[in-house]
Length: 413
Image 1: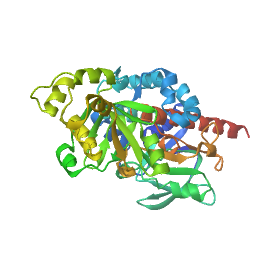
Image 2: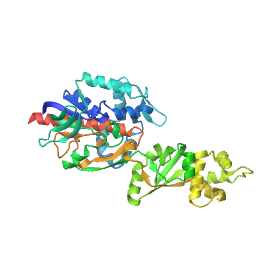
Image 3: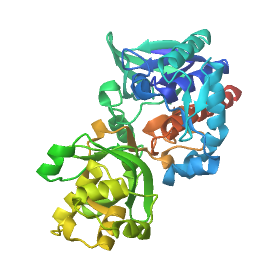
Image 4: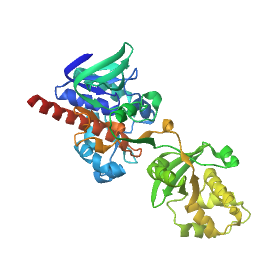
């Protein structure tokens, strides 16, 4: 057993864990950071390949509402470390940020690696010790942390611990949810993990699948029930994926759990009213084919036309036989039946995790005094757009501040 009586152990080398380590070290606490993979922040590095979306610039109330049911639980952490503070933190590392046209915030370099290198240099200067290849397996009877490492089993007795072990998406990068079993074994409530920000399954016809798999659906709106999301999506051989789909994942998942399916509606022309479409479709089409007419009159591209034909085929009513008002209604609300979600291994993030009832207001586990949790292993989810990283950073900082308060109280005993 290694005894670290004056040291805080941080377990997990992703954004939440790294932020917790920095916060503790800045306060003068010695920190040992344990990571199971051979490299830190692998998921963060992969997420930044297309541009590292750090956070979002929208007003804070709108921002917090994106966390849906978890918003009340996350509010204090995000308000204590809001998007403006995250941008300032990033720029203090020498990485200037900018706001894109969608309101999303990115480092000027658009990459993770420069930011991560600067962050590692800062942590090293603060004295944070990093131990790679250490997989946390739970607690022993003395409430000590147990790890598997190349040298065998290692037991750590630290002054406090912050666990930031991730969810279950992208398990090859380290987030495999192996922590769930020891948590449940310790009597800690964990909501079942489920895919979030993932594609959905649709049983396309063979003709549609063969022709349009891989084709984009641009400038559309998706709706389920009374809620909708604008953006873009991609037709896949198995269904649909993309930002507009991801934003509705919680509602789609709930509908599938309740009904075994979910009904989506795709608005192919969200900026045009149904009456406007009817007026355009009332114009003579002459000798043009229906596809050519729709393409020219309504600027519908091939994938959009394919969706209309697919829906008409399933309704057993040829598109060409529909009156103008019926075609307009279909364009504004193409029905798509979702039969399931893509596997959690292919999801961008995870829903479910450690219940907020299992922690106090400082992010400390009620069942394990001195142990704090942060990041995606908590029971929250959010759409893409910077919300995932913001909450990970903010809860990492909040858990570390909770640990600092715990250490201060303990020193007074």
